[in-house]
Length: 116
Length: 112
Image 1 (cartoon, one colour):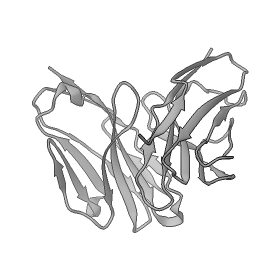
Image 2 (cartoon, chains in turn red, cyan; image 1 turned 90 degrees about the vertical axis):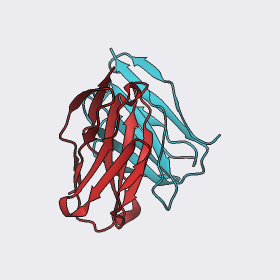
Image 3 (cartoon, helix red, strand yellow; image 1 turned 30 degrees about the horizontal axis):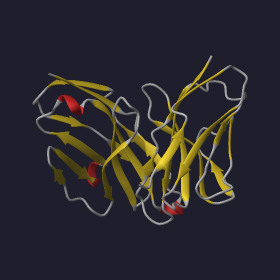
Image 4 (cartoon, each protein chain N blue to C red; image 1 turned 180 degrees about the vertical axis):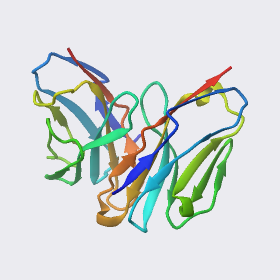
């Protein structure tokens, strides 16, 4: 069965610290997509990244970077030099291609608090 | 601009009443989804629809109903059979092929 686990419930850092959010997934499919979303206090989900299972290249986008490792079924997210505006709930999600239902399986979310 | 509109943003209802949450998209997306979020938990799938006049149950469909009479609209009814309806509800859509999801801004339902 598919499952996404974000073991870190809450993380608190001081501004300018680097922080890594962990995500481990389970799936029997060989083709799937992984996502990270940010949910600020207003509630909407902000898309951060999508990665397909055949692309294990790490990605950097400004202060954000993602480390995808199929060998350990992990898709971790690092924020470098964190800022107060990064405070939010972050969700990792999995979507399997088989059946083309497009269902997203979400982790429990990690609440990140960045203190000034 | 294209997007998903959920209304209302906040909704209060008395226990035992049915309530319908609206979700409208102008993205021409085929598939639409309803998710429920409880505090400290991830989003869980309630119902989804991949085509007009067809929909399937998600993981927590009990106490909910949906319809998909138009491509643009996917309303969710929270019935009195739903034991704990107070939650944050998010609607999403995506094109038939592809994995680019668009989410609405959500409806926070409180049942008193």
